[in-house]
Image 1 (cartoon, rainbow, N blue to C red):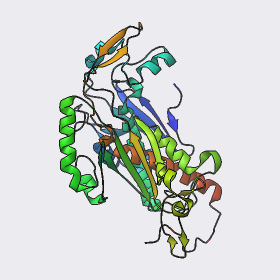
Image 2: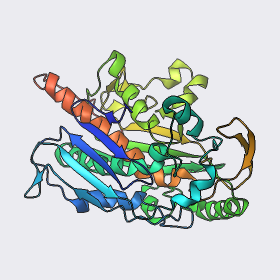
Image 3: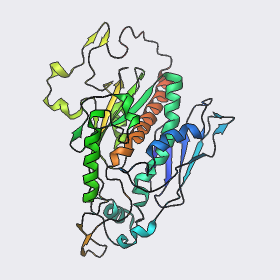
Image 4: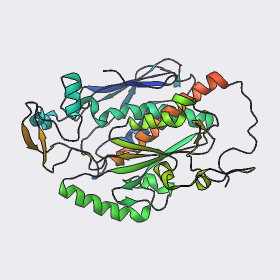
Length: 366
């Protein structure tokens, strides 16, 4: 299976399956001298791990990461950083009855036809459990970006089903189990999810991720545009069916006179472009949103076929997230961090000698 790596200078490769022995990864290209520890990575892994509230899967995994290489006396050495997370709470028997059945909405059908074999235990490589290593690798990128360049990356659940955030108070995001920025909607979210779980169904969500203090000039025009690579990394997250940069699909109804971000001596007056122009960062906030589909692992009966092409009716047993968006917050942050880290190193490698006086155009005017 190809396609297990992302990035050029800061490169992350992952391996492992949902019900395998462990998940692992290798981070190449991290500069030397960054103070990093397993505890630093564990912060984001704890935000992502299952079983933390009644709104997520009740699979119990400690997701304790081990750093196998690339660190000496608490600092990165510049060599490959090896990461490992052991699986501990697999219940493969929950999936034995679907070994010969294609779950509708899952990758079972496509995996079978591509490889002629599939790991039916929780989806194998296609499981969202694979993202644990991405989060660990992203935590390295996040710390480097913040420590050496002041870049801060934060995400929140901006919409769950029909319930949208109408105000963005980042101080409450980490204080509620939904990672939701609008505290006035928490009761409505709780009630909605209680009803959904009783029905045995699932729901989609929207996650918004923002990077602040991003330097001007990141991104390679044409094929490796910054926004194109951000879209690529975010779209690689399980269940993501749409990516927006800045205003996204709202631009369809905008006129050029209202969409363009006016520039004044004090800076930009708006950020409809989401911090990227012509594939290059403007110095404004990078703003991206992802749409995650409702998980197909539900107990509502559905129709499908088996490997003998016979019609079947099935339900998916096991422990699953009724809304995958809730645990996608640190994953979105990780993928944006990995992409920005890679482009920062690429920019420095080619254009470090460029010394254009930025003038007042640094970020967005207050």
